[in-house]
Length: 135
Image (cartoon, rainbow, N blue to C red; front, top):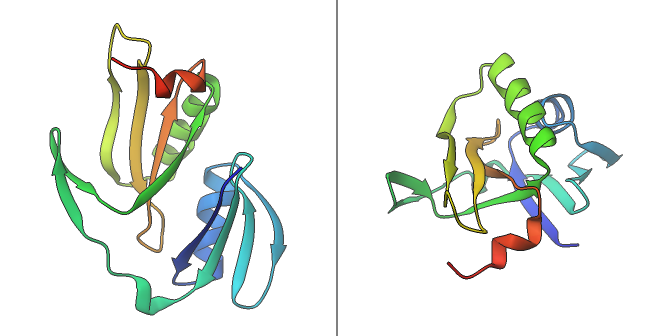
């Protein structure tokens, strides 16, 4: 399990994105932060409007947020999250795609910005350990 702290602009939009759209569980909420069970990882979303600056680099087909985080989930969870994001009309930073086709690392992937501008990448893979496969 990893622990990650991210800056957010407000609590309400953070709860909407992570809890309502992505289906995460909020374990604790305080005035200035929210603890989120991000698919088995400890995500702390802390109020900090000053930390909202995000830069992008060119990787593959276009600009990709250099500072991002994400989760690898089973394909059915990926599809449920994707459907919720589409229903909520969230703009994709990287449109849903299938990459590394025909290799052990084959995966479906998308990248979105939460409502505070943090880049969140979601990968769908039947066996998450294959993300470490060479080739």
